[in-house]
Image (cartoon, rainbow, N blue to C red; front, side):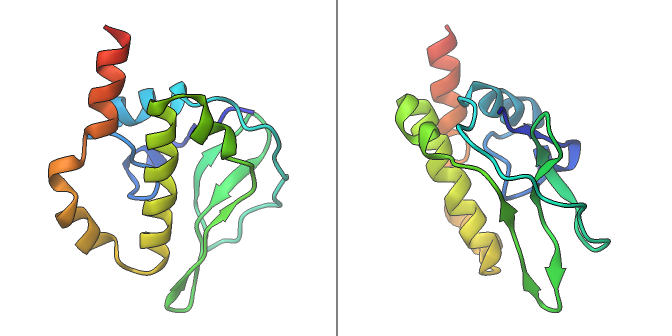
Length: 128
């Protein structure tokens, strides 16, 4: 199953793998399909979906009081093994997910500004 970012997901810190929406969409499109997923129920009213597979939502983001919750119901290990590009995208996705859950995304964005389009540059070189 392919992960398909929603329009909100393309701009969200957790899902943003490129410098622009188009670059982020290109990186997500380059990732291999997930080998297995679990079907999640209907998202809670306070949640919004960042990505889907052809089946119902696989990735939601509800808030619980002041905390954050992230549900991703799939196996991403193929992303880390398919190529250097997908390995970097896999690493960036999970790093951003953890930083977002810990409320650290603002500081991480400042620190990584010079590396923000690393994955995209590699994708552009690969497709040339």
